[in-house]
Picture 1 (tube, rainbow, N blue to C red):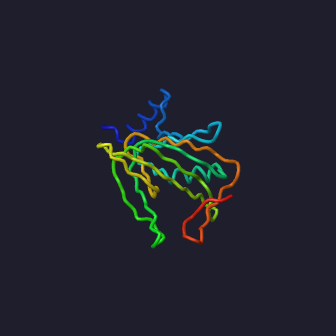
Picture 2 (cartoon, helix red, strand yellow):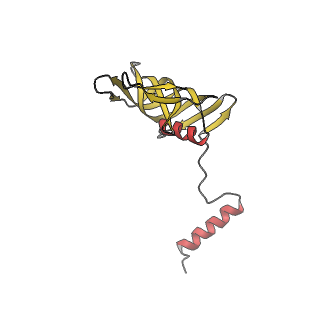
Picture 3 (cartoon, one colour):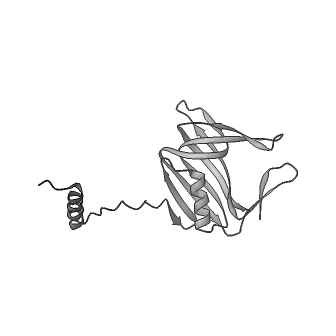
Length: 167
């Protein structure tokens, strides 16, 4: 009589367990570690950098921070249009993030990121500006977050419609 797939699966699981191998999927590796000045994030292919930073700020109750980073990304930059009070977007694929700089503050009890960056393509042409979206492409993105003790706030400047930082 042929064994069933269920009995084969159970036998395999028992054999793996006997050798200290779990049949359960491994828990995802942590994406950040605490440092003396804040946090270090190491993000992998497909990660949404802005989303990960917002989750970190919320989870760790970061009052305010400055950040820097580098890595491989698919960015969307925006250029502030004074007339429409919106960003004119432009997206790129497969670029190297030569520089990421920015801050974490709070607006309406949610993290409010302000990020700028410079990327280069394979021809070494550089592009940059205000970051609207940032996805990790190949390799990784490393972000150093330096935490400040005071709570930083973002609010709209009525004179020009831009969101600015205060404390």
